[in-house]
Length: 487
Image (cartoon, rainbow, N blue to C red; front, side, top):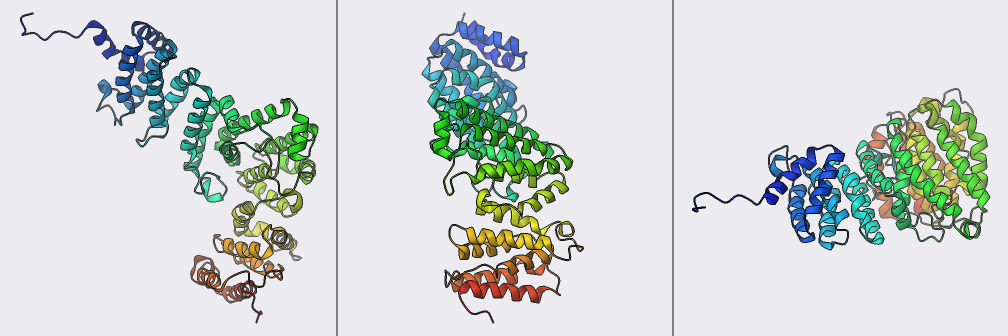
C-alpha cells in the first residue's frame, strides 16, 4: 500500500519459482510426488506456460553453476524439467502444446547443435521419454526416437554408420554406439516394429540391422555391454519372426529354408558367439569344427545373390561373428579364426568385398612369425592365402579383373610391417585370369597406382633388399591389368 513497497509475487508464482530446485534435488519418489501435486494445481494453459519457461532453462548451455536456472547445473535443469514434464504429461496427456514442448527439449538434448552431456541424455531417456511416448501417437514417437538413435550413432564410423572397417571401431565409436543402443534397448518393442526387423518381406529399415551389427562387432572385453544390448535386440526380432502366423511359409519364401532349420542355425550361431566370451582359446577351438560345419551347411542352402531379411542367419551375420572373433582380446583366437577363414567355402559363405578387403587383408600385415612360421618350409599357409584371394577374384560379381584391381588398390592402403604379405598378394594377382577383359585398368589409373606405390609409405617401410623384387612384381601386375605384355 502507499506505492513505496513493491507488491509481492502471488504465492503460486513464488512457489513455482522454487519448484525446479526441489525437483532436481529431491529423491525420486519425493520429486515424483511433488510433480503430481504441482500438476494438480495448474490448468492446462498454466502448465504449458510454466513448462515453457523450464524448457528455456533446460536447453540452454550452462557451464558449471554460473548462468541460468537459478544456479542449477545443466544436468539438474534437465532433471527438473523431465520430472515436471512427466507429471504434466500424465495429467494432461492430450495437450499438444505440452507434448510439442517436451519433444523439442528431448530433440535438443539428444541431437541438437548445443552439445548436451551424457547425463542429460540419460535423464531424457529414463525420466522424460517414457511419459512422452505413452501420450504420443505410436508411429510419430517411433519415427522421432529412430531419428535420435541415428543421430547419436551417426558418428560411430567413418563410412556412414556401417561400421565395416577396422579403423572405425575406436573408443569414440564405441561410446556413440553404446548411447544409441541404450536408447534403442529402452524402446526395443517400438523400434523393432518401426524398423521392420522381424519382417521377411525385405522391407525392413537398414538402420536397425546396421546398428545391431555394429554393436555385435566390438570384440574387446570392455565392450561386453554393447554386444549384450545388440544381441537382445536381434534375438527379440528373430523370436518375433519365428512365432509370427505363417512363419513356416514366410521363411520358405524368403530364404528357401524351413522354420526348424532357421532355428537350429541361429542356435549354432549364438553357441559360436558364446565361445568368444571366454578369454582362452580352447573353447572356440574345441567347438569350431562342429558348429561352423553346421552353420556353413545351412548357408550353402540359401539362395545366392539375394538380399536376405535380418531374421535369417545369412552371410552378413556370419561376417559380424568373424569380425567379433578377429577383434578378440586374445591374439591366439584372432590367428586361429584367421587361419580357419582361409579354408572357407566361399560359395557358401558369400563373404562380401568390403569384408575381405577391409577386414581380412589388413590383418596379414601383422603377426608375421605366427602367420608365416619359418618351419613351414612347404609354405602351406601361403598356399591357403593364395587360394582364398584367387577364389575371391574368380567369384567376384563384377569379374576377376575388377576384383584384382580393387585388391591391388586395397593392398596399397594397408600398413604392412613385413614384405611377406605384400609379396604374397602381388604374386597371387598374377594367377588371376583377366582374359575376359582386355584392359581392366585404364592408363591414367595405372599411373596413379604406380605413383602411390613408389612414393607411398608401403614401399618405404620395406627393407632395401626386397624393394626391387616387390617393384618388379607390382609392375608385372600393373602391365597385366593394362592389357599389355609382361616383359
